[in-house]
Amino acid sequence: MRGVWKLTLIQMKLYLREPIATFFTIFYAPMMLLLFGAIYGNKPTPLFGGRGTMDVSVPAYIGLIIATVGLIGLPIGTASARESGILRRFRATPLHPLAYIVSDVLSYLLMTMLGVLLLILTGKLVFNIRFEGNILSVLGSFLLGTTAFFALGYLIAGLAPTARIAQTVGMVLAFPMMFLSGASIPLEVLPAKIEAVSRYIPLTYAVRLIKELWFGDAWGQHWKEVAVLAGCLLVGGIIAAWTFRWE
Image (cartoon, helix red, strand yellow):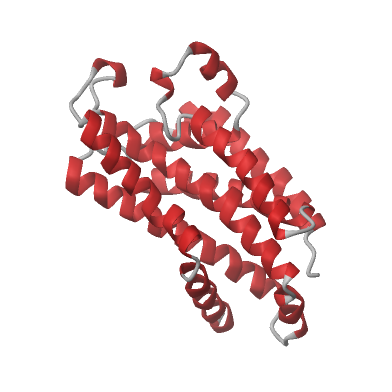
């Protein structure tokens, strides 16, 4: 475990040295919150059930961070490490291959959590956002959504022959998801046709689960969201394990 934690810290330091990855993981969502908060404020509105725009935006933006790391940051980082021979050298060390995989997942998870914490802190300090749920329930939904998208990210990294292709595929998948799932723009203000399309987007279910648990719903009310995300985690994880390449 000591080797895993040391490797995790190294992976996080390397992540923070990438300015683009750091910006979109940690600062992008809080900046969007501040921008749209300055425009719309956080006054209660009937459109959001008596809640403010920022109240509903913060849990939705958590999905934005998850998609950014899972579909863009992780595939690019993994494919780049394989392409540059880093994975091959890791496999040649006495450290067990599983230690690298665990530390890799942990580093991305901790970076995602850092971005989420900064987002929530910004929302609370600047807009005094409301939280009506159970912290452990919301944490569980976050972990389920994050690991599901990590599985999809490793799947992209395993299938992509180069880091450039992993980046292209990740962005092609991530950006439509962000804008059509309610992660960046609430579905309540989008046309009905967009809402119909959102039913076929995995990120929709992560955003909905986190948001509804944030406002006090129980897990039993969202079995469909749980099933979709668990399916992504299971199927994506199995295929990702099968397609993972060290070189």
